[in-house]
Image 1 (cartoon, helix red, strand yellow):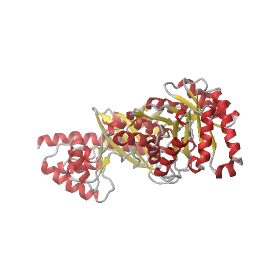
Image 2 (cartoon, rainbow, N blue to C red):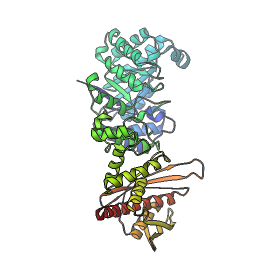
Image 3 (cartoon, rainbow, N blue to C red):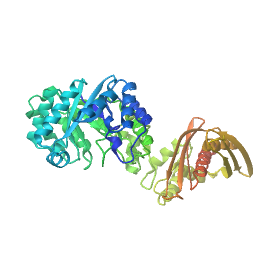
Image 4 (cartoon, rainbow, N blue to C red):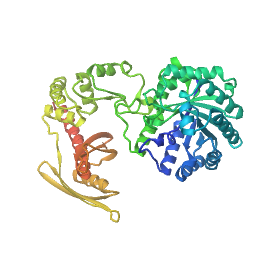
Length: 510
């Protein structure tokens, strides 16, 4: 099998997406993760465009090892010099230069004749070849360029020293069959194409970025320019994680390998989401929350019998935890029973049937039934309470010049317990005070917050994952006050822990 190269442009094209700007430190952190992921080339930025871009490229080039660092330049010496000054000390460096070749771009943007465009491209590649071992050339808007002119300029820049020819679908205009034929025609009509690697850069304006890239591979391309989570200008680019898993799952069709460590895909996606404060859509392939979730009763039954009935890859293969059975109105008894078992609640067959009937009525009123709902359903069947701890009061003293201190009052049955604690911040202080009041030691594993409503008085929902006695418990809370929502979420996790303990005890007595 051939091994294709992955050229990641998240830090350049991806960062051009509205609201996607990163600090220098964030770009460096993400570049380190890309190296762990195994990308062959990291396009660190466009150095001449700003001092910020220049410094970020320089930091990445000097410190990120094990991959090639590329910088973007227009076909002018000033840009090429900026790339050399910023990434010249990289372990492996590449100059990526471009000029538009479509009639509309040459006439209205560049205001140059085709001959002038060829002359400029050749001059830039020749100049860059004296500074860089690797020079990549892109005819911008390649898919809307005239074929004969495209053949001509590609041949000329290869003669000048270009080692990679990237054919970009700059505006996401082409169709897969059409794009495949374009790559094939370049392979057949450029006499010296054997001296360069063909690369492709597909935008996703029509949702065809990954499909077009795969079509290009079928016809001889051997490098793909992609971004994590598919971010980028307008509708973004071909998504790295989708392309890689398409190649892995369908090796029978593509017969291609890559150097990507697929178990790093989910971590890389999550890191980018956190850095850019941009949530991953739930239905996003590979990395979305729903990608390995199943609600339909038929699907759940099939999954519990053999996961291959409804999954073409494993969540573990992309660095995720096991598949999730999501409970809702479409779920069946098999999925419900599995969740009861996972929560550590021991119910007899008759109790499970009774609990399932209650669950179905609840599911008709809610889009999704969460674990805390299941705990309450189980509690009603077993005749135990679902709420043991009630947050009666809390007070926070915090600021940038004081140590955050929290006081909480928790009601446990008829007793009231009041405790105080300090923490690294107000939320840490609240959680530690609740630990003391309930005499339960929890370890915060995950903390998430999002706005349920909009505006200045938005309701925020907090979800926490707390580990107690080596078991993880989910808690959720909402309020216009995020501290109150956090306290409620943590108390909810404590209640789930307590209910699980008492339910198991009750079941043993039965």
